[in-house]
Amino acid sequence: MVREKQALIAAMILMGVTPGLTVRADGALEARKAIQAAYDRFGVAMHRKDAESATADFTPDFTELDGDGAAIQSGIPTERRQFQALFLYSRSITVTETIQKLALRGKRAIVTIKEQMTLDSTKQTPQGVRPLTFCSDSVHEDVWVRSGRRWLRQSTRTLSIQETVDGKPDAPVPTRARSWRRRREAMLPSPGGR
Image (cartoon, rainbow, N blue to C red; front, side, top):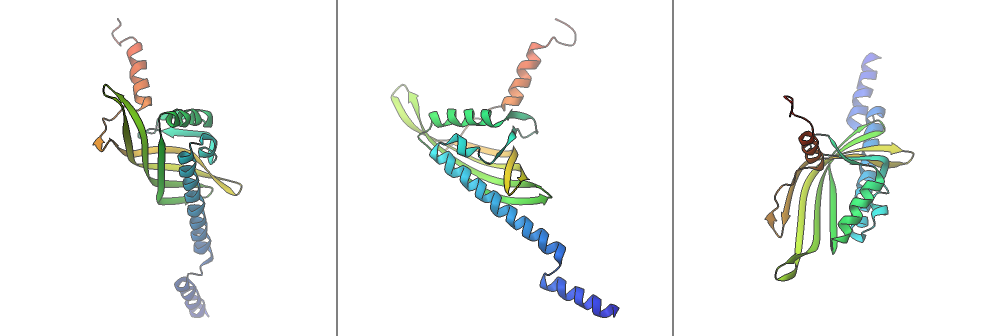
């Protein structure tokens, strides 16, 4: 009797019928499809220059983090203002986000994505206005939370980024959080007094 049960369990494992594993795999696959669809909607909204649609899959407390995990900015209104400013300076924007890795933890998903963005704009030079192309290849870690039947992006953290302007490497710009810390520290009295 014991051998029959062991043989049955072994057969179920080989056929992939183990209830716990199958449900978890199906849940991760469903989450991956839903989250990738949200990334695709984001790309379409950015191309249309539609800030409201671009933030439709964000949680109200959405937070953008720098590589160290410090908050750069927070909230949908702030994100929308940032996107609208970006739209003013661009002729066209193409954003493609592709899931590299997804870890499902209950109603949370930790997602590593590769993002490619191309922004066509213009630049004022002494010779007049000329076209300018900005490209960015980056890797982000996003946290998504399940809300009812939807997945919403709660935070995004940049893990790595490479930027070019007209095909040439762009000089790295310090993150807003780091530059704010430097300014704040410059305003504070030194430990020995002034």
